[in-house]
Length: 487
Image 1 (cartoon, rainbow, N blue to C red):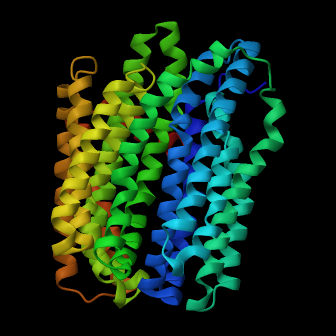
Image 2: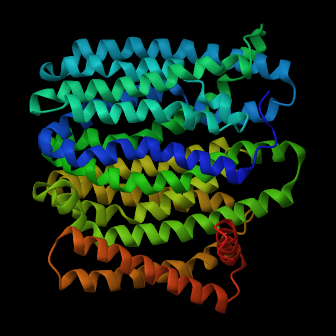
Image 3: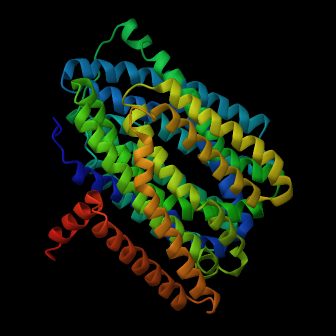
């Protein structure tokens, strides 16, 4: 049986490593892929991948969060947990089978003729989604497995891209490598299944009990997918695949740091779900307070830092033809802070406390705002219009989630604690922007900008934390110094 007392710090490190693997693959290869496939090729990949992922997300029904929660709540009773797992996975298979049939119908009757073969390759994402049981391991707080299973496959995928993708004609090869890597990652999970659970007989009641909570989360997933994936689909349909290529690379830059911050919420969900069943409200609030504070500090540094270097970074990293991606990064940088805050409130309060209807309301608000502003702005501004719509959508979710959690989490107090670090982030942005204005675009100057930004943010944060007794920040620093034997 898995270690039930797993350290949150260790799990966070494992989850960060996992997200690094997931995010670094496209991030590291994107300069090479952008130059080989061009904006059009990157756009076509993004368009076909996004639609396949959309179907995959619909098939998952929100099982990642619900499964994580319910396994964490039942893991202390193995037989009950096994029945719960079996009934939930069978429910998942039934739904996913229908989604796969719908995807096949889409390919045959609705997909553009020139993309049909590419959509067929992308079916590997749906097959991976059908087999995905990662939520079982998350429920046991075993995050080490997700890292170890991914490392070799991710590295092999990187090597395969550099070895096999040599021209624009190799777009299908690139798509196959990416999809196959995802599928194999899922398949490997089943090698360790017997260590945690086994298939058990379950009653009809145990099967149908999942319907209501999964349907609520399903509609949340549908709404979430609208502003997560619909941007790309709408850009491809309304604007052009080149604009979509610029947006795809810009979004990679935004997703990369967000993955590290939101990893903390993923790690905390099973722990808080377990604590909630025991009624330990004091410990839960302390966890939420600290993770929110940490997330906003980290997100502020990254968001304003990325915005400051976006113009130079896009040219150095992807080439002059992708300079427009820099503008998109600047616009969407604010979403890093919003997604970090939203992730903590969602993963550590709304979902563990079964506030599924409130969560649904929040994401539906974001989805409606996103579609409305995309329809208004994309025809005139292309990918930049979608970027603005994305920021508005996440701010809408931020507002609604905080309204629901306002009293329970004392949101007003938590917001006040974050303001100084937002101001420090703005100060860093100004300093770096002034430097970049008077220097040419080069990799050397880009490195100098990053150093200037880092030194500025850390110096001002330290000055504030020790002057105003920010115990959360100083405790994190002291822990880091002790860890590396500096203190």
